[in-house]
Structure formats: structure tokens, C-alpha cells
Image (tube, rainbow, N blue to C red; front, side, top):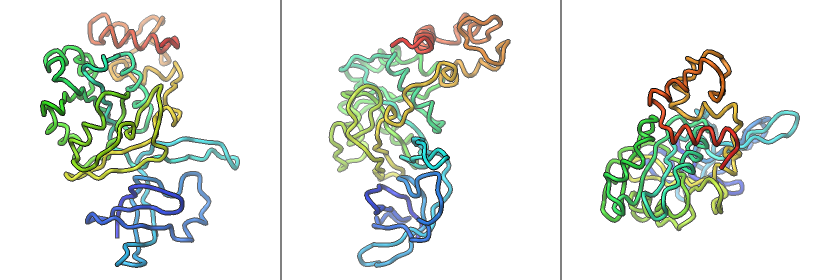
Length: 301
């Protein structure tokens, strides 16, 4: 049987096999003997399972498919860095902020986006929740600069049933990592998308300053296909702090113009012939995003 690892605990792995059933598995002994530079089996891995007891739904993982991408920590050991894989094969990162209550801190949103850009996941989108509090038109005014930057933005309200279908279409058949500060309605939004999940407040991934209640990644299957991923925060994965020379790679609107700069290595702060600053002057980069870039470059909050 083929399946996807939903969660890892001790030496056991819950695997949802194709067809939907969840089997409790262990790893075939000979696989453990291979010398590895990475976690043997991680949440999100695609695996093959051989039945041990079909009635009890227990089995052995006999092979692990190559990973397309990972969320991971690298730690030293044995002369080679070891990759501690938290999640295998994520498709997208969903960053959730509220239109109000709490008041959106857009510079914090920029930090979330930088942290997401620093992962191996290419597809990142923003969900602006609680739009019923200020109206969708006002929310679009506030967050329109992110659409200008190139991020898809979905406007939602659980109470007013706004944007839920659009969000469901985005999540369908994807493995989606959820990020965002506390209080923005991540849990209520996910519980609305997947009735019966009953996530507790704090269970869904937070990045930034704050408490992280989840220590291991866990996949929650969605009825329409795909998974919502509950993981440790990106801060814990060492992805929150980015070196200044890497920063321009994590602002898509800056990244688009950087190849046209006069110098191959350009900070876009002071160099002559900088195509990014020309784009800024033409209005192709929003001044608030540029302010976030320069503040982060100089190590300011």
C-alpha cells in the first residue's frame, strides 16, 4: 500500500494509506541500518506499507519516496550536518492575519513572509481574516500592497461566511502549513473549513515571538483532499533570523528587479546603478514594503 505519514511518535508512524484508512506502522529493520544524513521517516513522507495485521491495521514501512522539499533543522554530528526533518513535501504556506482585533501590524506580517520565503516552499499566500469587522473594501485597501508585491490574498470571515469557498479551493489537494500570530482566528478558520477537527487555540503553527505549543508536525486530512499542517514555529526551525545579504531574495518585488542591478552583489541600499531603487521611484515597489526591507536589513524591529 502507498500512503502519507500523518504523525510520528516514538518508533511508531500513523500512515493514511491511499483510500483513507489510517494504519499504525513501524519501520522495516533493514531500513534503520542505512547510514543517514537526514531523518529516516518524517511527517509528510510518502511511503510504502506492508500489512502485518490487516484487521488491526498495523504494518511495516518498507520504503520511503524521495522528498521534493522539507521544513527542517540542520544540526552538527558525525562530521556531517544532520538534517532534522520536521515536515516532508509541504506544498504551500498560508500566513493568516486579522483585519482587526488584533490591529494588523504589517511590519510583523513582512517578517512572517520573510520567514516563509526562507523555507524550501515556493507557494506562499496570505489570508486576511475577520474582514466583517471593517468591511472587505477597507481590508483590501490595507492589504493591497501585498497583492502588488505578488502574493495571492484571500479575504475571509468565519462569522459572515466570506471567502471560505475560495480558501477551500486553494487548500484542495495541497499540504498547507499555517502560520500567523495568536488571536487572528486561525483555529476558528480551520475548524470552519474542516468541521469536527476542533483544533484548540494555540495548536496551529505560530512564528515570531510567542509560545509554541506544538513540538512535532502533524497532518490533518481535509475532506476535499489535502492536509492542514500543525507544526512547530518557523522561529524554532531557525528560519526567523535571516542574514542581511540574503534578505532581498525574500522580498519577491525586490527579487524581480535585482538581476538588473549594475553590480552582481547589491544590497540595494547605497550602490549606484541599482535597478531596485529605480523600480521604487517608479512606484513598482510599495514604500511601506521598502521601509520594512531597510529596517530588517539594518536589524531594526
